Image (cartoon, rainbow, N blue to C red; front, side, top):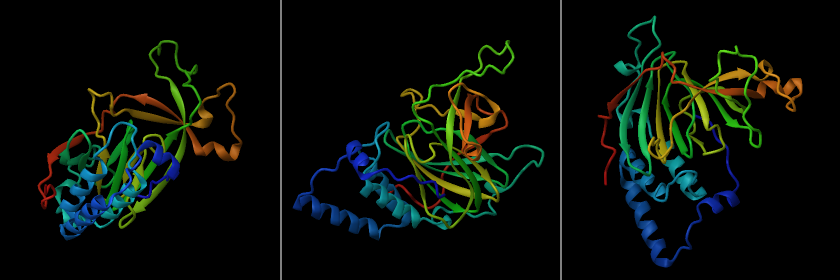
Length: 282
């Protein structure tokens, strides 16, 4: 979906250094790649994810080689490879007066990574949320989607607003974030990637038309491990005045204040098991 911020090779090497390749390893890797090329798109994706996220952990970014390999495999995935069509019930609105339901088709999850597909009817929204410690790959399978994403402004402490009513003693703190993407994307387009602290780690999806998004997360959300999905409300930079923080007028739209919130009441995700063409060839 076009959200991409490439890290330097030096930084990636520090986070996940590849071992030096021996002749034996080289032959094994060639054989594995040959087997993967012969697979159908779904099983090829699953096998690639197993390889890319073999050493996954919070904040660990796969190597540049692995990132490019998974992006290439995702680039070849089409809606028909996962058995989806825009006319399916997942993509229709049952009640025009209510916010459209979003359907999540669960494909696979282990402690290293998860795979699933979000199905959004027209005007469906996945509210602004984060991906703590995760590297996330996404492929827009069909449709047009508006994406707005943010990264935190580093080295700037949270700020407690003073413009709320005195009774609002539990108001969460605000944090300044930089807008990374604010645009429409239409399939076919390149797979996107976001990183633990860069590339638009917090984002919101709004379906312009019916659309489907294949997501791969490594590692997946895990409440016991502290990787919670947090939701945020955004405010214009000009809404709050903070001592020591100022921006030229022309740059203010590139920054917004984000405040953590409860899961929006109107947001409803219906979870279903994936039932399309086989993906999990082991």
